[in-house]
Length: 256
Image 1 (cartoon, rainbow, N blue to C red):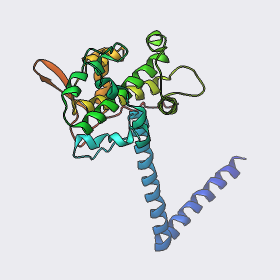
Image 2 (image 1 turned 60 degrees about the vertical axis):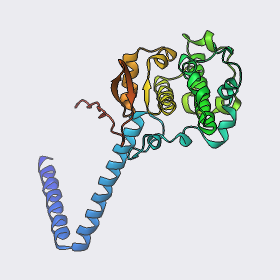
Image 3 (image 1 turned 30 degrees about the vertical axis):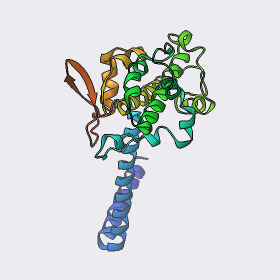
Image 4 (image 1 turned 180 degrees about the horizontal axis):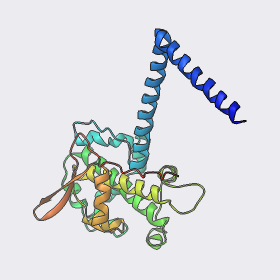
């Protein structure tokens, strides 16, 4: 009945008031509640940070780095055991300057002359390994797409690199690369180009290799924390540190 409903509501309100008085008069109970609230705030903050990482969809990074080379540490992108599988470009450098390079992306071909002139053998071998990995990433993207399939069909992937690419960029439920995985692969490629070009890169050639416009590629650079400058009439992407990412826009859920 209506009378019973009103009576139940009255009892409920009185019960809440009684609990509030007990909480106010009991310091231990209040402290326990504050602890729970703090935990909720911390958990909410952690959730926001996690959401930001997922939404940004970029390689492992250190946002507070004071040196660009530490912002996206190369050792977290290429593991120690993988370097031995990334020797292709280094062996190419040992051949004559006119050796066939048609199978390599334009970005890689356009950096070979600089590597040949480098007298630091360790630096040369590292850069060559990165260029080889860039080649594999681009070919992996092509071989899993309708547009670039023909150009990458005969490309040979070392087993460790193929496994890594499958693990990072492929959803086991489908033969195609999901959009978020393609974006992640592009981010990996761009970070590697920054390492090769000492964090000031002309991205016209890598845009063509990725079959993208320079305008679209800029958005990916910006998502990594990059800025842009013009040097000798050429637009280049740079990586200021510490990293400052663009704000992630979150969709508002409609109220029902």
